[in-house]
Image (cartoon, rainbow, N blue to C red; front, side, top):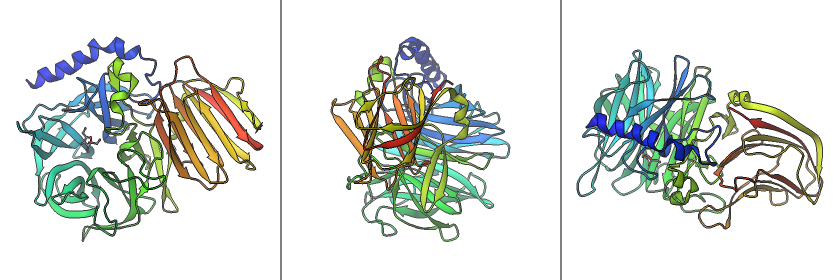
Length: 479
Ligand code: FRU
Protein backbone atom coordinates (compact mmCIF):
# COMPACT_ATOMS: atom_id res chain seq x y z
CA UNK A 1 0.00 0.00 0.00
CA UNK A 2 2.55 2.56 1.09
CA UNK A 3 4.89 1.83 -1.81
CA UNK A 4 2.11 1.78 -4.32
CA UNK A 5 0.94 5.32 -3.66
CA UNK A 6 4.55 6.53 -4.04
CA UNK A 7 4.90 4.57 -7.28
CA UNK A 8 1.65 6.06 -8.50
CA UNK A 9 3.01 9.55 -7.80
CA UNK A 10 6.13 8.87 -9.90
CA UNK A 11 3.95 7.38 -12.65
CA UNK A 12 1.89 10.54 -12.63
CA UNK A 13 5.06 12.61 -13.13
CA UNK A 14 6.11 10.48 -16.10
CA UNK A 15 2.67 10.22 -17.65
CA UNK A 16 2.23 14.01 -17.81
CA UNK A 17 5.83 15.09 -18.32
CA UNK A 18 5.30 16.24 -21.92
CA UNK A 19 2.01 18.00 -21.19
CA UNK A 20 3.62 19.87 -18.32
CA UNK A 21 6.80 20.77 -20.19
CA UNK A 22 4.95 21.98 -23.27
CA UNK A 23 3.36 24.79 -21.29
CA UNK A 24 4.87 28.14 -22.28
CA UNK A 25 3.95 29.41 -18.80
CA UNK A 26 6.46 26.97 -17.32
CA UNK A 27 8.93 29.10 -15.35
CA UNK A 28 12.63 29.32 -16.22
CA UNK A 29 14.14 29.99 -12.81
CA UNK A 30 11.57 29.26 -10.12
CA UNK A 31 10.78 25.98 -8.38
CA UNK A 32 7.58 24.30 -9.57
CA UNK A 33 5.94 20.92 -9.09
CA UNK A 34 6.86 18.27 -11.69
CA UNK A 35 3.10 17.66 -12.01
CA UNK A 36 0.08 18.57 -9.87
CA UNK A 37 -0.06 21.21 -7.16
CA UNK A 38 2.72 22.76 -5.10
CA UNK A 39 2.01 24.91 -2.08
CA UNK A 40 4.00 25.74 1.05
CA UNK A 41 7.80 25.56 1.33
CA UNK A 42 8.67 23.02 4.06
CA UNK A 43 11.77 21.82 5.88
CA UNK A 44 14.04 24.51 4.46
CA UNK A 45 17.56 23.88 5.79
CA UNK A 46 21.21 23.83 4.80
CA UNK A 47 23.07 20.68 5.88
CA UNK A 48 26.74 19.99 5.10
CA UNK A 49 26.70 22.69 2.45
CA UNK A 50 23.56 21.48 0.69
CA UNK A 51 20.30 23.40 0.82
CA UNK A 52 17.17 21.27 1.09
CA UNK A 53 13.78 22.65 0.23
CA UNK A 54 10.76 20.42 0.63
CA UNK A 55 7.32 21.40 -0.57
CA UNK A 56 3.68 20.56 -0.07
CA UNK A 57 2.80 18.47 -3.11
CA UNK A 58 -0.38 16.95 -4.52
CA UNK A 59 0.79 14.78 -7.43
CA UNK A 60 -2.61 13.47 -8.54
CA UNK A 61 -4.50 16.69 -9.34
CA UNK A 62 -4.13 20.46 -9.52
CA UNK A 63 -6.18 20.92 -6.34
CA UNK A 64 -5.47 20.39 -2.65
CA UNK A 65 -5.76 17.06 -0.83
CA UNK A 66 -3.60 14.42 0.86
CA UNK A 67 -0.22 16.13 0.50
CA UNK A 68 3.21 14.59 -0.01
CA UNK A 69 6.52 16.27 0.79
CA UNK A 70 8.37 16.75 -2.50
CA UNK A 71 12.08 17.55 -2.23
CA UNK A 72 14.62 19.72 -4.07
CA UNK A 73 18.28 20.21 -3.16
CA UNK A 74 20.94 22.70 -4.20
CA UNK A 75 24.44 23.76 -3.27
CA UNK A 76 23.98 27.35 -4.43
CA UNK A 77 20.25 28.26 -4.31
CA UNK A 78 20.32 28.53 -8.12
CA UNK A 79 20.68 25.04 -9.59
CA UNK A 80 18.23 22.64 -7.96
CA UNK A 81 18.01 18.86 -8.25
CA UNK A 82 14.88 16.88 -7.79
CA UNK A 83 15.18 14.34 -4.97
CA UNK A 84 13.02 11.32 -4.18
CA UNK A 85 9.69 11.88 -2.40
CA UNK A 86 10.48 12.54 1.27
CA UNK A 87 7.09 11.88 2.89
CA UNK A 88 3.89 10.32 1.61
CA UNK A 89 0.49 10.11 3.34
CA UNK A 90 0.66 6.40 4.03
CA UNK A 91 0.22 5.97 7.80
CA UNK A 92 -2.77 6.15 10.17
CA UNK A 93 -1.41 9.41 11.63
CA UNK A 94 -0.93 11.21 8.29
CA UNK A 95 -3.28 9.37 5.91
CA UNK A 96 -5.00 12.57 4.69
CA UNK A 97 -1.82 14.55 4.23
CA UNK A 98 1.74 15.08 5.42
CA UNK A 99 1.06 18.75 6.04
CA UNK A 100 3.57 21.57 6.46
CA UNK A 101 6.52 21.55 8.84
CA UNK A 102 10.22 22.13 9.23
CA UNK A 103 13.65 20.49 9.49
CA UNK A 104 16.50 20.56 12.01
CA UNK A 105 19.81 18.75 12.21
CA UNK A 106 20.60 16.90 15.42
CA UNK A 107 22.83 13.99 16.29
CA UNK A 108 24.07 13.66 12.70
CA UNK A 109 20.56 13.29 11.33
CA UNK A 110 18.07 15.46 9.56
CA UNK A 111 14.82 15.48 11.48
CA UNK A 112 11.56 16.58 9.91
CA UNK A 113 8.59 17.77 11.95
CA UNK A 114 5.28 17.89 10.14
CA UNK A 115 1.55 17.71 10.73
CA UNK A 116 -0.23 14.44 10.14
CA UNK A 117 -3.66 15.39 8.84
CA UNK A 118 -6.35 12.77 9.43
CA UNK A 119 -10.03 12.85 8.54
CA UNK A 120 -12.56 10.24 9.61
CA UNK A 121 -15.49 8.97 7.52
CA UNK A 122 -17.65 11.92 8.61
CA UNK A 123 -14.92 14.36 7.56
CA UNK A 124 -13.97 15.20 11.16
CA UNK A 125 -10.39 16.37 11.36
CA UNK A 126 -7.64 15.05 13.62
CA UNK A 127 -4.13 16.45 13.86
CA UNK A 128 -0.84 14.88 14.93
CA UNK A 129 2.58 16.49 15.06
CA UNK A 130 4.96 13.87 13.67
CA UNK A 131 8.66 13.32 13.16
CA UNK A 132 10.75 11.62 10.46
CA UNK A 133 14.53 11.11 10.36
CA UNK A 134 17.23 10.72 7.78
CA UNK A 135 20.92 9.88 7.88
CA UNK A 136 21.60 11.00 4.30
CA UNK A 137 19.05 13.78 3.78
CA UNK A 138 17.44 11.75 1.00
CA UNK A 139 15.47 8.86 2.46
CA UNK A 140 13.36 9.43 5.54
CA UNK A 141 12.07 7.07 8.14
CA UNK A 142 8.89 8.09 9.94
CA UNK A 143 9.09 7.99 13.72
CA UNK A 144 5.41 8.66 14.31
CA UNK A 145 3.55 11.07 16.53
CA UNK A 146 5.40 13.34 18.98
CA UNK A 147 2.57 15.70 19.96
CA UNK A 148 -1.17 15.11 20.19
CA UNK A 149 -3.72 17.92 20.31
CA UNK A 150 -3.62 19.71 23.70
CA UNK A 151 -6.75 21.01 25.45
CA UNK A 152 -8.15 24.33 24.35
CA UNK A 153 -7.70 24.12 20.56
CA UNK A 154 -9.67 22.84 17.59
CA UNK A 155 -8.06 20.33 15.20
CA UNK A 156 -6.80 23.29 13.13
CA UNK A 157 -3.46 22.89 14.83
CA UNK A 158 -0.52 22.46 12.49
CA UNK A 159 2.71 23.51 10.72
CA UNK A 160 5.41 22.93 13.40
CA UNK A 161 8.53 25.10 13.03
CA UNK A 162 11.38 23.87 15.25
CA UNK A 163 14.59 25.67 16.28
CA UNK A 164 17.23 25.49 18.96
CA UNK A 165 17.74 28.24 21.53
CA UNK A 166 20.69 27.78 23.89
CA UNK A 167 20.40 24.16 25.05
CA UNK A 168 16.74 23.51 24.32
CA UNK A 169 14.53 22.94 21.33
CA UNK A 170 11.43 25.01 20.69
CA UNK A 171 8.50 24.52 18.35
CA UNK A 172 5.88 27.03 17.27
CA UNK A 173 2.57 25.77 15.90
CA UNK A 174 -0.25 27.53 14.05
CA UNK A 175 -3.55 27.04 15.84
CA UNK A 176 -7.17 27.87 16.36
CA UNK A 177 -8.48 28.16 19.92
CA UNK A 178 -11.81 26.60 20.90
CA UNK A 179 -13.39 30.06 20.64
CA UNK A 180 -12.19 30.21 17.00
CA UNK A 181 -9.30 32.68 17.29
CA UNK A 182 -6.00 32.24 15.44
CA UNK A 183 -2.99 31.62 17.72
CA UNK A 184 0.74 30.82 17.69
CA UNK A 185 1.57 28.18 20.31
CA UNK A 186 4.97 27.41 21.82
CA UNK A 187 6.37 24.00 22.85
CA UNK A 188 9.72 23.06 24.39
CA UNK A 189 11.83 19.89 24.39
CA UNK A 190 15.24 18.69 25.51
CA UNK A 191 15.46 15.75 23.13
CA UNK A 192 13.04 16.52 20.25
CA UNK A 193 10.90 13.62 21.47
CA UNK A 194 9.15 14.71 24.68
CA UNK A 195 7.50 18.10 24.20
CA UNK A 196 5.99 20.43 26.81
CA UNK A 197 3.15 22.77 25.85
CA UNK A 198 4.17 26.26 27.05
CA UNK A 199 1.10 28.03 25.70
CA UNK A 200 0.08 30.83 23.35
CA UNK A 201 2.73 33.46 22.54
CA UNK A 202 0.66 35.57 20.13
CA UNK A 203 -2.70 35.51 18.45
CA UNK A 204 -6.03 37.06 17.76
CA UNK A 205 -7.29 38.62 21.03
CA UNK A 206 -3.78 38.41 22.52
CA UNK A 207 -1.28 41.19 23.35
CA UNK A 208 -3.62 43.98 22.24
CA UNK A 209 -3.88 42.90 18.60
CA UNK A 210 -7.68 42.68 18.87
CA UNK A 211 -9.63 40.52 16.47
CA UNK A 212 -7.02 39.11 14.17
CA UNK A 213 -8.31 36.12 12.29
CA UNK A 214 -9.83 32.71 13.00
CA UNK A 215 -6.74 30.65 12.16
CA UNK A 216 -3.00 31.31 12.05
CA UNK A 217 -1.05 29.11 9.64
CA UNK A 218 2.65 28.43 9.16
CA UNK A 219 4.28 30.39 12.00
CA UNK A 220 8.05 30.86 12.02
CA UNK A 221 10.03 32.36 14.90
CA UNK A 222 13.61 33.55 14.46
CA UNK A 223 16.10 36.15 15.51
CA UNK A 224 16.85 38.86 12.99
CA UNK A 225 19.38 41.61 13.64
CA UNK A 226 18.88 41.47 17.40
CA UNK A 227 15.08 41.14 17.59
CA UNK A 228 12.71 38.19 17.49
CA UNK A 229 10.36 37.92 14.57
CA UNK A 230 7.14 35.95 14.39
CA UNK A 231 6.25 35.39 10.76
CA UNK A 232 2.73 34.04 10.32
CA UNK A 233 -0.13 33.64 7.83
CA UNK A 234 -3.43 34.64 9.49
CA UNK A 235 -6.76 33.76 7.90
CA UNK A 236 -9.86 35.90 8.32
CA UNK A 237 -8.58 39.49 8.18
CA UNK A 238 -10.87 41.98 6.45
CA UNK A 239 -9.23 44.45 4.02
CA UNK A 240 -8.27 47.82 5.54
CA UNK A 241 -7.38 50.45 2.96
CA UNK A 242 -4.44 49.16 0.93
CA UNK A 243 -3.77 46.37 3.43
CA UNK A 244 -4.98 42.78 3.51
CA UNK A 245 -6.23 42.75 -0.07
CA UNK A 246 -5.54 39.07 -0.68
CA UNK A 247 -7.80 36.23 0.40
CA UNK A 248 -5.37 35.30 3.19
CA UNK A 249 -2.46 37.33 4.55
CA UNK A 250 1.18 36.89 5.47
CA UNK A 251 3.11 39.20 7.74
CA UNK A 252 5.19 39.53 10.86
CA UNK A 253 5.46 40.91 14.35
CA UNK A 254 8.79 42.29 15.62
CA UNK A 255 9.44 41.89 19.32
CA UNK A 256 11.25 40.03 22.02
CA UNK A 257 10.58 36.49 23.16
CA UNK A 258 11.13 35.64 26.82
CA UNK A 259 11.79 31.91 26.66
CA UNK A 260 11.53 31.53 30.46
CA UNK A 261 8.02 32.86 30.78
CA UNK A 262 7.02 31.99 27.19
CA UNK A 263 5.87 35.52 26.48
CA UNK A 264 6.37 37.44 23.29
CA UNK A 265 6.16 41.23 23.53
CA UNK A 266 5.65 42.63 20.08
CA UNK A 267 4.57 45.53 17.90
CA UNK A 268 1.99 45.72 15.14
CA UNK A 269 1.51 43.21 12.32
CA UNK A 270 3.18 44.27 9.08
CA UNK A 271 2.45 42.70 5.71
CA UNK A 272 5.48 41.10 4.14
CA UNK A 273 4.67 41.27 0.45
CA UNK A 274 2.38 43.72 -1.31
CA UNK A 275 1.62 41.65 -4.41
CA UNK A 276 -1.13 39.25 -5.43
CA UNK A 277 0.49 35.88 -4.74
CA UNK A 278 2.47 35.27 -1.59
CA UNK A 279 1.73 32.96 1.34
CA UNK A 280 3.11 30.60 3.99
CA UNK A 281 6.81 31.54 3.74
CA UNK A 282 9.50 29.71 5.69
CA UNK A 283 13.01 30.78 6.67
CA UNK A 284 16.27 29.12 7.61
CA UNK A 285 19.62 30.33 8.89
CA UNK A 286 22.24 29.17 6.41
CA UNK A 287 25.89 28.30 6.95
CA UNK A 288 26.90 31.85 6.00
CA UNK A 289 24.68 33.17 8.80
CA UNK A 290 22.06 34.56 6.45
CA UNK A 291 18.36 34.38 7.20
CA UNK A 292 16.87 33.17 3.92
CA UNK A 293 13.20 32.83 3.05
CA UNK A 294 11.15 31.08 0.40
CA UNK A 295 7.45 31.83 0.01
CA UNK A 296 4.72 30.09 -1.89
CA UNK A 297 3.82 32.29 -4.90
CA UNK A 298 0.15 31.46 -4.46
CA UNK A 299 -2.69 32.03 -2.02
CA UNK A 300 -5.19 29.32 -1.01
CA UNK A 301 -8.65 29.70 -2.57
CA UNK A 302 -7.66 32.85 -4.45
CA UNK A 303 -8.65 32.07 -8.05
CA UNK A 304 -6.64 28.85 -7.98
CA UNK A 305 -9.05 27.03 -10.28
CA UNK A 306 -8.60 29.76 -12.94
CA UNK A 307 -4.83 29.35 -13.39
CA UNK A 308 -4.22 28.67 -17.09
CA UNK A 309 -1.46 26.16 -16.23
CA UNK A 310 -4.08 23.71 -14.98
CA UNK A 311 -4.74 22.47 -18.48
CA UNK A 312 -1.07 21.51 -18.54
CA UNK A 313 -1.50 19.53 -15.32
CA UNK A 314 0.45 21.74 -12.93
CA UNK A 315 -0.09 24.77 -10.72
CA UNK A 316 1.93 27.18 -8.55
CA UNK A 317 5.57 27.88 -7.76
CA UNK A 318 7.91 29.16 -5.09
CA UNK A 319 9.18 32.73 -4.93
CA UNK A 320 12.88 33.41 -5.35
CA UNK A 321 14.97 32.86 -2.22
CA UNK A 322 15.31 36.17 -0.37
CA UNK A 323 17.74 37.29 2.28
CA UNK A 324 16.10 39.07 5.21
CA UNK A 325 17.28 41.93 7.37
CA UNK A 326 15.64 44.14 9.94
CA UNK A 327 16.08 47.87 9.34
CA UNK A 328 14.24 50.41 11.50
CA UNK A 329 11.75 47.80 12.66
CA UNK A 330 10.90 46.61 9.17
CA UNK A 331 11.92 43.46 7.31
CA UNK A 332 13.95 44.19 4.19
CA UNK A 333 13.97 41.43 1.56
CA UNK A 334 16.56 41.04 -1.16
CA UNK A 335 17.02 38.28 -3.69
CA UNK A 336 20.05 36.22 -2.58
CA UNK A 337 23.25 37.33 -4.29
CA UNK A 338 23.79 33.89 -5.86
CA UNK A 339 21.01 34.74 -8.34
CA UNK A 340 23.46 37.09 -10.08
CA UNK A 341 25.11 33.95 -11.51
CA UNK A 342 22.19 33.65 -13.90
CA UNK A 343 22.71 37.10 -15.47
CA UNK A 344 23.58 37.03 -19.19
CA UNK A 345 23.92 39.67 -21.93
CA UNK A 346 23.89 42.90 -20.00
CA UNK A 347 22.26 45.89 -21.67
CA UNK A 348 22.80 49.28 -20.08
CA UNK A 349 21.29 52.73 -20.64
CA UNK A 350 22.53 55.72 -18.67
CA UNK A 351 20.43 58.75 -17.79
CA UNK A 352 17.40 57.86 -19.84
CA UNK A 353 14.81 60.60 -19.87
CA UNK A 354 11.20 59.49 -19.87
CA UNK A 355 8.76 62.05 -21.05
CA UNK A 356 5.06 61.81 -21.62
CA UNK A 357 5.24 59.22 -24.36
CA UNK A 358 5.27 55.50 -24.05
CA UNK A 359 8.73 54.28 -24.85
CA UNK A 360 10.43 51.01 -25.63
CA UNK A 361 14.19 50.61 -25.56
CA UNK A 362 16.20 48.52 -27.97
CA UNK A 363 17.07 45.12 -26.49
CA UNK A 364 14.96 45.71 -23.42
CA UNK A 365 12.26 43.07 -23.60
CA UNK A 366 11.93 39.39 -22.87
CA UNK A 367 10.27 36.80 -20.67
CA UNK A 368 13.17 35.79 -18.44
CA UNK A 369 14.70 39.06 -17.43
CA UNK A 370 16.12 41.04 -14.57
CA UNK A 371 15.59 44.75 -15.00
CA UNK A 372 17.14 47.27 -12.64
CA UNK A 373 16.31 50.97 -12.52
CA UNK A 374 18.10 53.61 -10.52
CA UNK A 375 16.10 56.80 -10.43
CA UNK A 376 18.61 59.63 -10.57
CA UNK A 377 16.30 62.54 -10.57
CA UNK A 378 12.93 62.46 -9.05
CA UNK A 379 11.02 65.41 -10.49
CA UNK A 380 8.30 63.31 -11.98
CA UNK A 381 4.65 62.94 -11.15
CA UNK A 382 4.07 59.41 -12.29
CA UNK A 383 6.24 56.73 -13.69
CA UNK A 384 5.22 53.32 -15.01
CA UNK A 385 6.68 50.18 -16.54
CA UNK A 386 4.49 47.60 -18.27
CA UNK A 387 5.48 44.03 -18.90
CA UNK A 388 4.06 42.08 -21.83
CA UNK A 389 0.86 44.16 -21.83
CA UNK A 390 -0.22 42.26 -18.76
CA UNK A 391 1.30 43.75 -15.65
CA UNK A 392 2.13 47.39 -14.87
CA UNK A 393 4.10 48.83 -11.99
CA UNK A 394 3.35 52.51 -11.28
CA UNK A 395 4.62 55.07 -8.87
CA UNK A 396 2.82 58.30 -8.18
CA UNK A 397 4.91 60.85 -6.38
CA UNK A 398 2.05 63.09 -5.34
CA UNK A 399 0.06 60.45 -3.53
CA UNK A 400 3.24 58.51 -2.64
CA UNK A 401 1.62 55.28 -3.72
CA UNK A 402 3.18 52.35 -5.55
CA UNK A 403 0.73 50.24 -7.53
CA UNK A 404 0.93 46.88 -9.26
CA UNK A 405 -1.81 46.37 -11.83
CA UNK A 406 -2.48 43.24 -13.79
CA UNK A 407 -5.00 41.63 -16.06
CA UNK A 408 -6.87 39.26 -13.76
CA UNK A 409 -6.59 35.65 -14.85
CA UNK A 410 -10.00 35.07 -13.28
CA UNK A 411 -12.11 37.85 -14.83
CA UNK A 412 -9.87 39.55 -17.42
CA UNK A 413 -10.42 42.88 -15.64
CA UNK A 414 -7.61 45.08 -14.35
CA UNK A 415 -6.97 44.53 -10.66
CA UNK A 416 -4.43 46.19 -8.38
CA UNK A 417 -2.40 45.94 -5.19
CA UNK A 418 -0.84 49.02 -3.58
CA UNK A 419 1.32 50.32 -0.81
CA UNK A 420 2.52 53.71 0.29
CA UNK A 421 6.04 54.64 -0.65
CA UNK A 422 7.67 57.93 0.24
CA UNK A 423 10.35 57.92 -2.42
CA UNK A 424 11.27 55.70 -5.32
CA UNK A 425 15.02 55.39 -5.72
CA UNK A 426 15.66 51.92 -7.01
CA UNK A 427 13.62 49.05 -8.45
CA UNK A 428 14.57 45.51 -9.45
CA UNK A 429 12.12 43.50 -11.51
CA UNK A 430 12.58 39.74 -11.76
CA UNK A 431 10.41 38.69 -14.65
CA UNK A 432 9.90 35.02 -15.44
CA UNK A 433 7.61 33.49 -18.08
CA UNK A 434 4.56 33.67 -15.81
CA UNK A 435 5.67 35.61 -12.72
CA UNK A 436 7.08 38.90 -11.56
CA UNK A 437 8.80 39.90 -8.32
CA UNK A 438 9.51 43.56 -7.69
CA UNK A 439 12.03 44.72 -5.08
CA UNK A 440 11.74 48.43 -4.29
CA UNK A 441 14.49 50.55 -2.68
CA UNK A 442 16.66 47.55 -1.82
CA UNK A 443 13.76 45.40 -0.60
CA UNK A 444 11.87 47.92 1.51
CA UNK A 445 8.71 46.84 -0.31
CA UNK A 446 8.21 43.74 -2.42
CA UNK A 447 5.42 42.77 -4.81
CA UNK A 448 5.10 39.15 -6.00
CA UNK A 449 2.61 38.04 -8.60
CA UNK A 450 1.87 35.48 -11.25
CA UNK A 451 0.99 36.74 -14.72
CA UNK A 452 -0.20 34.96 -17.81
CA UNK A 453 0.47 37.10 -20.90
CA UNK A 454 0.30 36.14 -24.57
CA UNK A 455 3.20 33.91 -25.49
CA UNK A 456 4.49 36.13 -28.30
CA UNK A 457 4.36 39.42 -26.40
CA UNK A 458 7.73 40.08 -24.76
CA UNK A 459 7.38 43.84 -24.56
CA UNK A 460 8.57 46.13 -21.81
CA UNK A 461 7.15 49.66 -22.07
CA UNK A 462 8.17 52.70 -20.02
CA UNK A 463 6.10 55.74 -19.37
CA UNK A 464 6.88 58.90 -17.43
CA UNK A 465 4.70 61.91 -16.88
CA UNK A 466 7.21 64.63 -16.15
CA UNK A 467 10.91 64.18 -16.85
CA UNK A 468 12.12 61.06 -15.16
CA UNK A 469 15.82 60.30 -15.37
CA UNK A 470 16.97 56.78 -14.71
CA UNK A 471 19.83 54.42 -15.32
CA UNK A 472 18.58 51.11 -16.62
CA UNK A 473 20.28 47.74 -16.69
CA UNK A 474 18.78 44.61 -18.08
CA UNK A 475 20.02 41.05 -18.06
CA UNK A 476 18.60 37.92 -19.53
CA UNK A 477 18.26 35.33 -16.85
CA UNK A 478 19.51 31.96 -17.97
CA UNK A 479 19.89 29.24 -15.39
C1 FRU B 1 -1.01 26.62 4.23
C2 FRU B 1 -1.53 25.23 4.60
C3 FRU B 1 -0.96 24.74 5.90
C4 FRU B 1 -1.09 23.26 5.76
C5 FRU B 1 -0.79 23.05 4.30
C6 FRU B 1 -1.54 21.91 3.66
O1 FRU B 1 -1.08 26.87 2.87
O2 FRU B 1 -2.95 25.24 4.65
O3 FRU B 1 -1.58 25.26 7.05
O4 FRU B 1 -0.19 22.56 6.57
O5 FRU B 1 -1.13 24.26 3.65
O6 FRU B 1 -1.07 21.72 2.35
